[in-house]
Image (cartoon, rainbow, N blue to C red; front, side, top):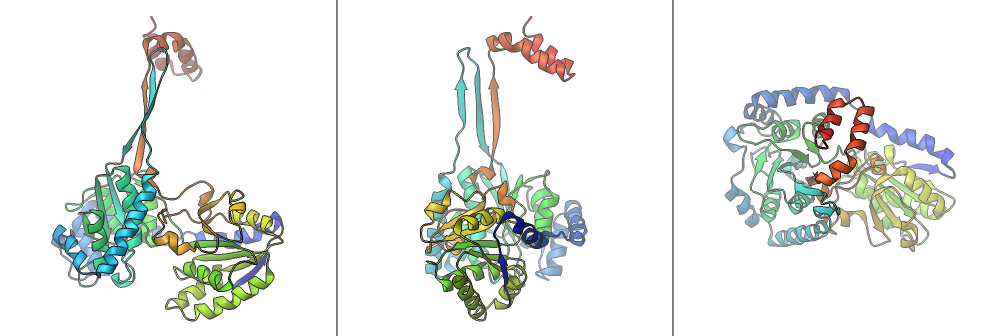
Length: 434
């Protein structure tokens, strides 16, 4: 399991590294065509197309009547999982809800002396569709994804939320997904996966009402479907493969760093795990730990492929240069595994989520701490942010100009309109000043 050994001293070293990492985002044009056909089929044939695709890929016996899961089945799932799991889910939901409550924005107004009122009105999106991957045959459900997408939508005030997830071969959904939906108070859960589920959430069928926004992770078919529908509906983001960058000094524990790198590498062969350190001895120990720990993982083959293709241990002259490199990486997850991470925080400009110190491993953010784990990837953190309450809100400007405002500024407005060749605009204002 060779892991790249790289050096970074100046920005001149970045070009080759960037070219290597950029290969992770090469588009698959064959998927584009397949997804476009799927979306058109669902748009035209609705539930019939959903059943057809689901029978082909997930559950051979699915009927239209089974697409929507009855509310009593959702609630009953709470008794089908261990009580200890219910307690953990409740606490995780509460922590995520508490964090996101602090993100709520209020409408605001300003009043001028002449009586003009200007402001911004914040309103939730009417209806949101959430996609939840089923995991391996429905046995490794992404319950954390449901929590991380549903909670900020609920905090924003979204009253209508539909959830889709692919059924298992027997036509059921993993009880942990259903129990999580019950704890969240969600009553619309549908059996549909992949691009056809996305199509149903956008275009609607006889069973599923159309949505105004989509959120939730998925495979290349889900991501491609979402990207093709941008502009028709809102989306959270088109997520790429997971990634972690770690800036570490001599105070870090090699075994912990290796475990943190592997926590991302086990996601996907395209996941990127990159350690940055000025300590060459630490780098060597982490490399040894990666080999040892990877061999012990159930998903070790995936992790090994990820590290071989997209893993790296980068040595730098010092932490300052390391921070410079970290900002160029602009990673989804960043761990500051250094003795005093707070002194370095101000130097970090680009990172989706920042984990401070030796006792803040990335998985605490994935599941339990509270901040959202839906984060931009592939260096898009240079201009975008974590999923938040704001994603599920829209803002309307409110303009109530007084007669005095129009009288005082009408000539200026008309002049600006005529500079742009828009005579009707100018006259619209001038008719109120005569």
